Length: 279
Image (cartoon, rainbow, N blue to C red):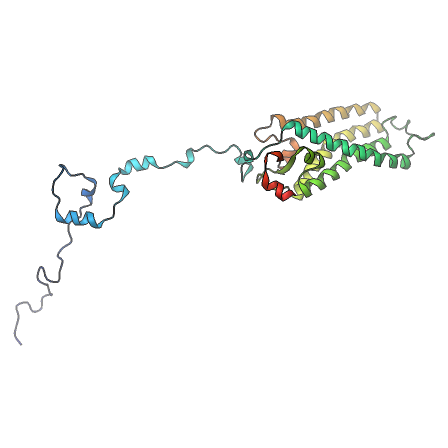
């Protein structure tokens, strides 16, 4: 066994055999530079590196320019109806004010005709209204308890039941159906009404708006009959609550629509999803 001068030293393969040598120097900085002259020869290592590396969009753009070209989502204007959440209410066709008023008149006329035809005979039979010897003239004159009971039933109870049931089941009353309008949720916009919303909207319209009317009628019976003129002021305020839809923006909601979070839409322009659901 012969001694070797390389004994005890780490093995180093000869250059060109079993070793690729040290890695080529990093040429990344040259990727951002164009050749100074056309036709200038590039070193073999740089040519091999450019062939192996896939083309990148960032190699030919300035990073600072990319930063300025990024879309800014904060600069976009927010929709005018984001306050209602969900879908935008402005995407749906809103019912014209005149048709809404016509539907309300039709519903009130139907309830008044059938209400008085049903309630007034019961009132006359129960209280003896108009019979000789009755005390109606001494108890408030024309504004007496039988009249208050009749008006309360016809103006509040029956319209409340009439509207709450129909809105909760179909999203429209007979008057609204006749004129091609309906009531939907405002948030999320376009969804059918829930039972709670239908009852709440009908209660505000036919009970809350009439509280002041019957308050003054009670005062007219118990204190002074001229207090009944106060109901004119209450009805004027209720009228303003309906007229609120004229100048309300952007969804033209009356006060009862705002409290119940509802919209009145025009079904004649092809709001198909709601029509299929309701029918």
